[in-house]
Length: 122
Image 1 (cartoon, rainbow, N blue to C red):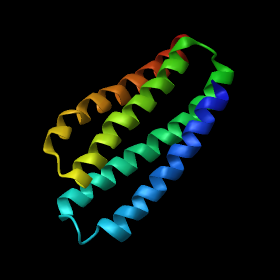
Image 2 (cartoon, rainbow, N blue to C red; image 1 turned 90 degrees about the vertical axis):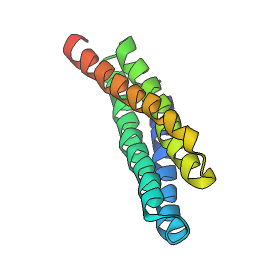
Image 3 (spheres, rainbow, N blue to C red; image 1 turned 180 degrees about the vertical axis):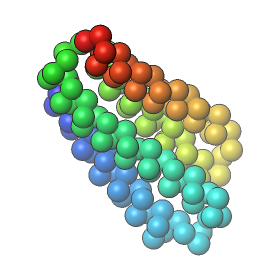
């Protein structure tokens, strides 16, 4: 899991940088300022949780417990659902995707909770 979370975190952090630059240089002026902010929120949360995955890669070597592994899966799920739904909402102007976003947020919260559990109990 160490290499999987390290590789996933690195790739997703790089993609977050690309999406942030895309927002700043391509979307600005093409979408409303509110939509641009939504897209940037997706990139910001993706970056934070990609860095979280890098930390989890290390954490799997210190606390090889199921909670750490599942925290990583929760972060990956959160990035896909939270950030992914925000990107698609802005790019496709499909409002119903906003209903998916909170599920991704819940996955982020679950991931942090699992990591805390591992640190306290692991």
